Image 1 (cartoon, chains in turn brown, blue):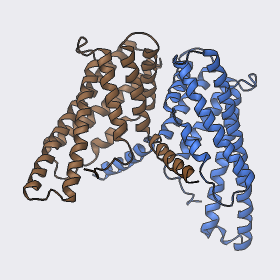
Image 2 (cartoon, chains in turn purple, cyan):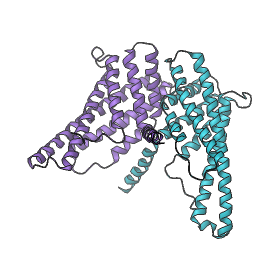
Image 3 (spheres, helix red, strand yellow):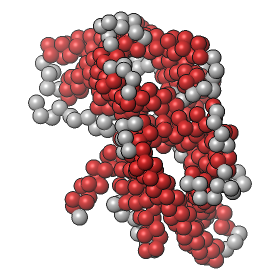
Length: 231
Length: 235
């Protein structure tokens, strides 16, 4: 019975993880960019999977712009400097616009909205919004990392390095570093999708970076992060 | 400020709702069967949307068979009669098999799995599993409704007809019975949808009928997933 209990507990964690819309979206994103990497932009099974999964994610993200719109009108934590607040809100506004326009792109791709030319144009604008939101996220993470490191240095001087609070800040700083890596890689993905530098950022490079950022997102969504208990 | 706060609170509820994978899946299911209804199986935009959304849902349900596998090996509430337990477990097993096979159907549709013929056969088997699971769900709901109505009658005798609406336990049971009736209606409709998808009665259950029943059962699912059911306080 104990092995059954153990399996059940493990399965319960997986069920909990997969019940999040965001986790499923990021798994599909990994499939999407993984097949973009494999196809290298050439027609074939891999490209079909890439395109189908891209379209599938669009229909699953209908109304998701509400998420960032909600973030936009929600209050920020007290003590956040104004430049970081503005950058954070710009990120919300840009991401929300991207997700809103992406709905129209879905309408266009599925043939409900007939104007193909305008669909393409809106698709490009939406990708620029996404690029902008990734730039904003990177800038926010850099700013927050700077704030964290200065407050940690202050604590080190006061010999509070064993403090619970210090360890929490260290953990936070690691999380933010990972988020910074992810958003910088997403900038490259956006440049690739927009074909702004088609020679250096080929579909294969775009796929590789997109796949990596998807895996990072999947990791970030894990229910309880592995705590830094073993030094 | 207060209107902004209300909007924010309302949006917060929408966000929580849409963050559930299940809610998003059922919204897409409504789109899928809604367009099946509109297309009536004829080529065109509506059929395109139906097919694309169907494929989209498959990729989003990868690994979802784990859900029912988990339910299959989880203990049941104490006091459930053996026939209902067996029906419930059969439902879990059938649904899990459906979701597992559906993954192979997805692999076939996207061209990763090359054997088209076998993908078609597995698709049909998977739909039979789904139909079986809907039949099991219907039977479970009928059985549970019977048990509930017996215990409600017993309670009525004990507390008398006048004060029954003041009784917390009585109200909870009536509420539960309403929920189960809705689940029974949904499962019954889904049996019709499975009939339509398998084309077992193509003259009666046309794509339009299938679409209509599928759309209605999707809306019921969306309602069931609402965070807090509207309580029947104002009666």
